[in-house]
Length: 461
Image (cartoon, rainbow, N blue to C red; front, side, top):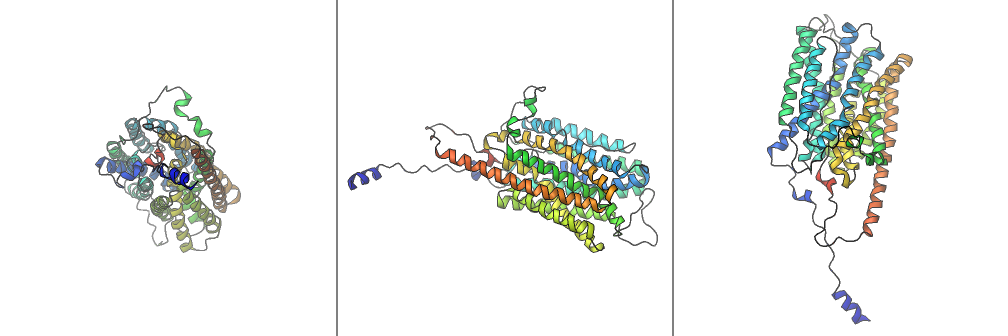
């Protein structure tokens, strides 16, 4: 018996050691200059698209005081909400086109629409449309960091564009000032268009029939519960956060934390008045959002789970909205609220696409752009409705209702994100169980590649 056992041990096959992940053999930071050019391209795309959306509070004050004096708060909120809606709505198509490497069509279309939209603002009102980034493909081991760096462009635009708008309108008047601003937008968008380049290591998906629904909508995404719940959570984030961002300058004025200045025909300075300008509350919020965008990328990389970071920031933002927005006692507390909420908001707004990369199954990684675009198109509806609900609540119950609305949406979002994480882990356990009984591949055969580690993040807003 013992001799038989020893004989069996002698002929036991050695354990199969899996080969190292292809990503592990790739340097953390690519040596190809096109990777960093794509990073700059993504930064400027965010700078112009979401930077302008984040700067809407500066435009909203001028509309209220001079251009649209008869407009209600609901109508003014509709302008900013419509911009967010139109920015996100075409993402389903843009994401799929990005999978097919039609990025130059997207970039050129975005360039024309951004320039023409802001140029026409000098005559009427403003619009915008977003392009999709392809920069994170180049950074498989630092994909969340790459997403954070490019997302920081939105915060930078939220600082620079309000300051530039204030200076140009005060110096040259609204029509000429906005035309100069549109030239700045065109120049930076052109830089993004020229520098953007797809990573050749990512497989290209043929587009398919344009008028076929399956070309643009992946049915497997709709049947993935963790993904669909995550999409609902992101929708609530956009509906809640921009409700505060659109009203923060008015909130500061109503609460007596700052003074609204008139930039329609001069420098905006008011003789004898040295109070803190309400304009700076929005600027502080946008500025600190850069910290949140970069910090959340670092934490997501360390934890290998961006949704955990997302849930934590949403919960903290809910507490902040519930207690600081209604009960801030003085100017210092209001500034602290804007600074901290900006950090949390930057994190909440920069993580969604990274969350999709975490949730998407390995075998569907080539559909990452499509899944991300589908998410943004769905989010666009609540990005439109959310600020309008906040405006209606404010008109009925007062300014404090905006904070309560945002806090409530963030609490629900926290629960949904936790649910999404639970479902994803449950799916992972099922996969691991099936792998135990899966037949070993024969020599020369390949299994579906674990492209989840390839860094294919898809479109980042």
